Amino acid sequence: MNSSVKVLQPSGMLASNQVHQFRLMLDEAIQTEADTVLVDLKHVNFMDSSGLGALVNGLKAARSAGKRLCVCSISDQIRILFELTSMDRVFEIFASQDDFSRGVLSGS
Image (tube, rainbow, N blue to C red; front, side, top):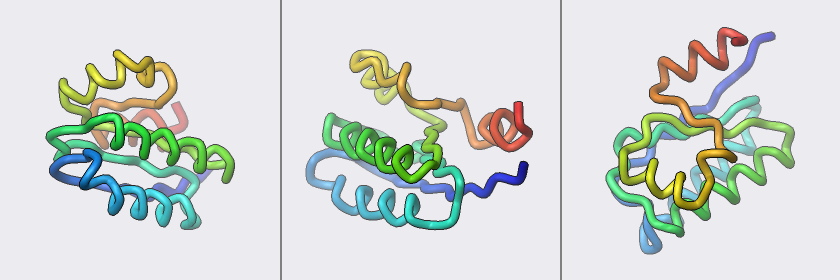
């Protein structure tokens, strides 16, 4: 099975004042022909509940469209946020884009 992927690479802060643009990017990515949206958080240095909310809304939209939404390269701060909210059990989280490619694109 050949899976197409749209990769998003936000940077800086995903917090209340900065999250609007990220929501738009996520919505656009979900509306593409890609089967999977990968959000690479490598360059995000801070996320609050607004950023997490944008990801959760994106996950719901992706699932409604029959697509996958995965995240990778999360910092320790973001990992703690995911764990405290139990979102680490909801999202598919990969250590890096390479791990995502090996795990998802190879069909493992």
